[in-house]
Length: 307
Image (cartoon, rainbow, N blue to C red; front, side):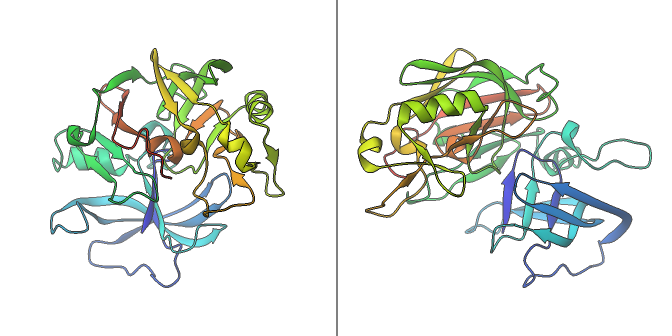
């Protein structure tokens, strides 16, 4: 299993020592070494080209195969989630950390799928669902699955802000309880993040409004009575409000928790905000490399009371 990450463009494996990489007839070392630092973890490894196969679904025999895809094989991985073997990088080519001898950035897997005519467009849609809901999410390569949407897609262009324009970056503002806590600024859509991150001033305002305290692990937490008074957190993108209900603002929790952990955290990146997994499991997100656009639509889980 790998993490689906729209915040990075490079695909790598080898974090799980029980599932070692075995070179096959299509595997060739490039002689390159690579290091990638994430917010809480680090990957170091060697670069290979190899055939990469993506299963369409767990119940189907259909699959997509990319030939001669550049991948990393880990030699050192620190602070990475257990039972996960690596990352499927679905970020934009412009964010690629790997270049060929001529200085050209290596394309991510969805662009190679398109180049090799395995899909009809260098685009993909991400449909996640809350952890405690029945069913499964999906990634659709080359098309968008309108069957899981409950609204049309609202498209916006990639931000012009250079801090986020190489990524799946957008412009947005944030409101809590109907009051602005973050004026229009730039950030990214990052399915690999477990949080919704904002600048310090915005998080401190949110903390003050919710009555949250900071845990020893640096996470915002609230009591049950504070949860009962939690207001809507809204992200305004392209003139459209994408609302996160109180339940969408908290991490999965036991039946009677002493403290409830919020999904909002401090941004430590050059861009101002990150819309991570908690946002994407409430809204369908469509990514298009050709038009440099991102689309958003509601799903049956947008207002779900589960997490």
